[in-house]
Length: 167
View 1: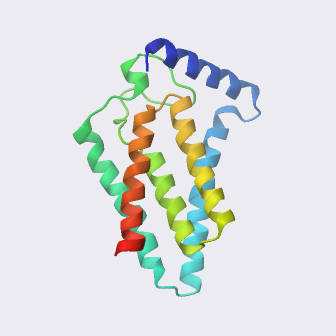
View 2: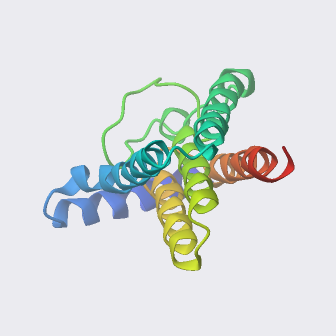
View 3: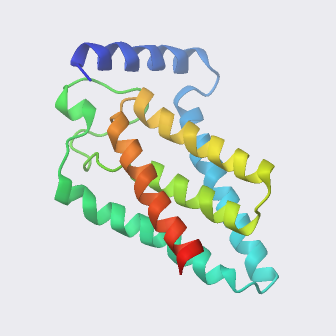
């Protein structure tokens, strides 16, 4: 991605957010929806005393921890720091590293956890669409590069499939 591409992309996202009621606050809705789906899934597993609760707690936590450990090791700057350009939405210069995207990794881990508990096509499709929306927004708003979200998706997929299928 070039600086010109970045500025054009985030500028368009910023303009779109200004036109919408709630603007920047809307960027939080997909993340809150994903967290809400996860909390409801955990509540369901607790109320039904389902043993899968342990996996559904451990697997997403493992994704989050591994992603958090990898970020400083990889050390990739966020696009807005590299290009010295303002992203769409709220941000803070020098705030952490970019690769892999922790939001995307968490969204993917949660989507796969919910699909593991509720293996219905509509539930799985809804959660995967929500995950894709979160990943796309991270790029379009200038928080991450495409490769950051792809790495996060791959990381969470491997950890989740291992945790839910192989173990």
